[in-house]
Image (tube, rainbow, N blue to C red; front, side, top):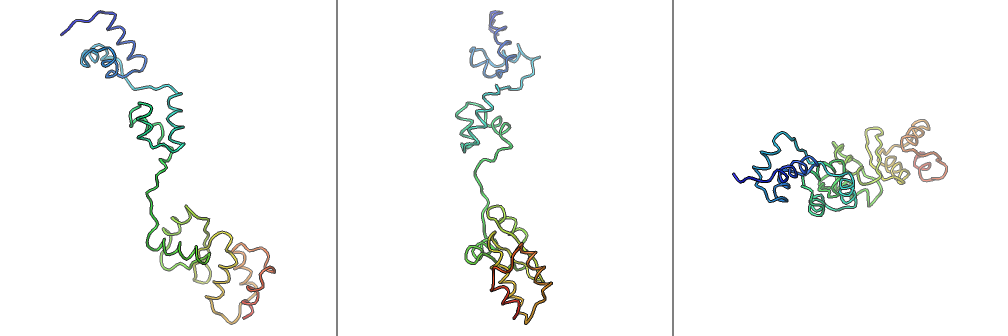
Length: 195
């Protein structure tokens, strides 16, 4: 084994103590990695990066830079970047709207509301992430509607119920369920309630 001056050994120990990895010290000083390990066997290393570098990584990821790219730009290992930014979304959403959720979405966009058929909890949960949707259950009917389409949705429920009459108490409960405060503004709903 090659002998190195004591000052080189002390420099290596100092660099490892300051937070540099043993592999980086080996590369920087041109000393074999096993020698650095031998000199610093009693020093536990956990790579500690300065706070300003961690902030820079977090800012880059918040601005939309992929975490892999942030690792490459800063020279920090990808695993460390992941650890520092685990609470930040990567910005890439792989969730897709398909099946019943897509059918509901098409109806919502076209009419402002859609009646749900069968189990719809997962569809509603997915749509609620991306759109201001609400849901109301009334007399066995469940309707999903966009925020602002309350009156259209209530009209659709009244049509679907297909009743000859409806009591004012029931109409009042329906109005409250849809969050409609003033019924006087919409004559169509009042007319349908009289049918």
